[in-house]
Image (cartoon, rainbow, N blue to C red):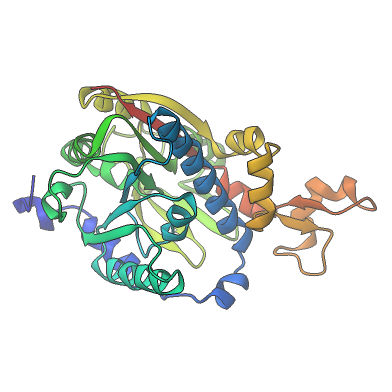
Length: 339
């Protein structure tokens, strides 16, 4: 479905424009961010998920040091470039709807190459709308197949319409080797609807994030596709998103030879992985939790009532209530290509 006339239709251009206009934040600015721990925690989830499935790929290869190729869908400005480098993959193709973000991603990749004296995986990056165009048409090697397709915090955009969701899943499937994995993170629509209902209005959230539905949609069953809401996350996101009806994803994925093999809410994935040697090492390395008590808390004191009983004891790793509320909207998922 390359370059169809529907290109101008839909909200893709709004989303692309939003991400293209986000200012580049340096490391110092990021460290000062109100949501620094939330961002680090999201990165911990992504790294843990990537490592989990890269290990499965390696275990299935005859040569344990074999080449691993990754397609990063919705790669943005290249937030995961470094993660793929640490994971030791051999080739990454990154695609994203936002052209300016792709240019920044290329710059980041070349900087990383410079720092590592060229000892870096092969990388290529393209501006593509994965919900309307065939990604394979853009690559240098049109026959390349991938061990992993990763789509972090971007899959929900394809639920604008059925043709877009199908185009996205076709892209995922035809890029994956048989036995390869499609992994990602996306908002949990059941949780969003439950929070909306208990809010008694068309919106819910706190000081750092909000989800707002059109007033006329409240009390109605959302459609399977095009169930639009506005998502705001301080400093990072302010744009329309779509509810992802997961039973529909599972059905559509099966049509394209993909079988769901895992799905877990962030808080459950965290509980399961945080005490494993690799998980706990990464948590401290990535500074994903905030030390309490501490001189400089991200939120006000009342944001930490949940850890007050530890006071007087040793420091504990935690997170402000607002950040945790924002984080726990998300779910991790994994599919395997069966045929």
